[in-house]
Image (cartoon, rainbow, N blue to C red; front, side, top):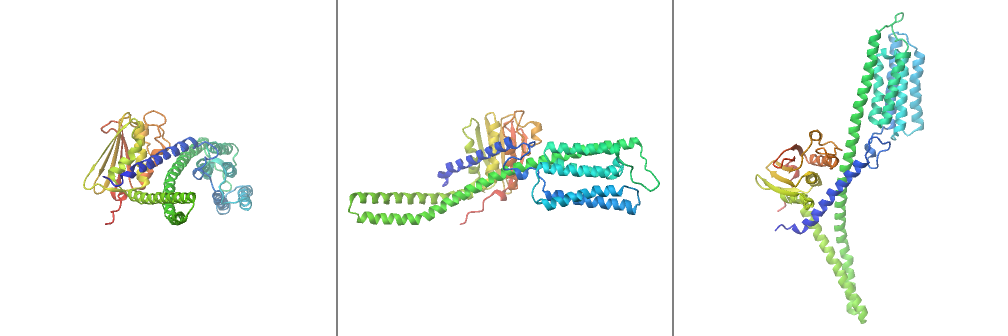
Amino acid sequence: MNPSAPLCNAARCNLSGHIYAMQDIEAVMVDSYDLSQEAPPPGIAPFFGRVRLRTLIVLRWLAIFGQAATLLFVSLVLDFELPLALCGGVVAASAVLNLGLIITRDIQRLTSHHEAFVQLGFDVLQLSLLLLLTGGLQNPFVVMLVAPVTIGVAALPPRHALGLTVIGLAGMAAMAVFALPMPWIRGETLHLPLLYEAGLGVAFVIAVAFTAAYAWRIGREAKRMGAALAAAQAILAREQKLSAVGSLAAAAAHELGTPLATIQLTAKEIAHGAKDPALKEDAELLVSQAKRCRDILQRLSAQREAHDKMHDRIAFRDALDEVCAPLRGLGTSITLRADGEGTAPYLARQPEFLYGLGNLVENAVEFAASAVTVEGEWNEKTVRITLNDDGKGFAPDVLSRIGEPYISRRSGEVGGGMGLGTFIAITMIERLGGKARFANGGPLGGALVQIEWPRNRVEAPAEPV
C-alpha cells in the first residue's frame, strides 16, 4: 500500500482548486482585456503599452540634434540655399518644448495615452513643417516622418494611433501642395518629373500605412502576451502563498505546543487540589480540552511532515492520477496508462508540471465526446505524456496558432478556453525545459497533444538512505 495514500484526497482537492483557479483567472483576463479601451484593466496595467516621458524627451533631443546638424551641414558645408532662420525656429520649438517638460514635469513617470498622443502629434507636425520648408516630398529625409507615427501606433490605443497616422498623411498632403523648393546648388533649381514626385508620394503613403500596420500588430501581440504572462505569474504566486500558509500552520502548531502544555499542567493541579466538585469538574474539562488541542496540533505537524514528503517526491503514475482525479466523474472516461524503459521515475512536485499538464488534460476532457487517454512514457533521458481525445480535434486555422494567447475555439465552436489557459500551460511546460506538440489523430481520432521533458528537469532527487 502506498504510505501517502491517506493524503491523496487532500492533494487532489488542492490540485483541483488550482486548476479551477487558473480557469477563473483566464476567464477574468479574457473578459476584461480589451485592446481598444482607453484605460488598461486592473492587474495588467504594466503590460499595456504606455510610454515613459523620459523616452519621448530623449527621442526628441536626438531629433533636434540631428535636424540642427543637417541644416548646418547643408547651409555651411554644401552652401545650399535654404530658409535657415525659419528652419531654425522650427527646430527651436522642439527644444523649448523639451526644456519646458523637463522643468515642469516628472520625466520618470509614465505618460497617459492622451499626453503621448499630443507630444507625438507635435513631433509629426514639427517635422512636416521642417520638410515643407526644405523641399517637401523631394527631400530624402521625408522618410523620417515614419518614425513618430510608428512609435505612436505601437504604444497607443487604436483611436490615438489612427489620429497620429492621419496627421502624418495630412502633413504629406500639405508638403505636396505648399512645399518650398528643394535646397540646391546656388544658381540652380532641382526639377523632378511630376510622375516621379507622384511616385514618391504614393511610396510615402504605403510606407506609413505598412509600418503603422506592422507596428500595431507587433504592439498588440506584445500587450496580449504581457497580459497572458501576468495571468501565469498570478497562478504561480497563488501557489507560493498557499505553500507559505502551510509552513505558517506548521510553525504555529509547534509554537502553540508549549503554552498548551502549561495550561494542561496547571489545570491538572487545580483539579487535583480542588475540593469543590463544580470547580474540579471544570478543571478536568479544561484538561481534556487542552489535551485535545495538543492532539490536533500533533496531527497537523505530522500531516505537514507527510505532506512535504509526498510533495517532494511522487511516483510518475501517481502524478498522472493526481492530475486526472479532479476531472473524473464529469461524463468523460479518462484512461490512464504508464509504461517505459527501466525504473519508473519519481517526479519532483512542481506547480509548472502539475498545472501545465492539468490544464491540457482539462481541455481534452472539455472537448472530448466521451473518452480521453493519458499515456505516460519514460526512458533514461526523457519523460513523455501523450493526451488524446475522441472529439473533433483542432481546426486547421487554430492548430497553426496554438500557443498564442486568446484563441478561444477548437473546431468552429466559440468558447472552450483554448486560449489563455493553453498559453499558460505551454509557458509552464517550457519553464521546465519541456516541449508541447499539438496535432490531430491518434487512436481516438481527435486532438493529440504530446508533452516531453528532459528527465533530469522533472525527476526528484534520490531519497537519502
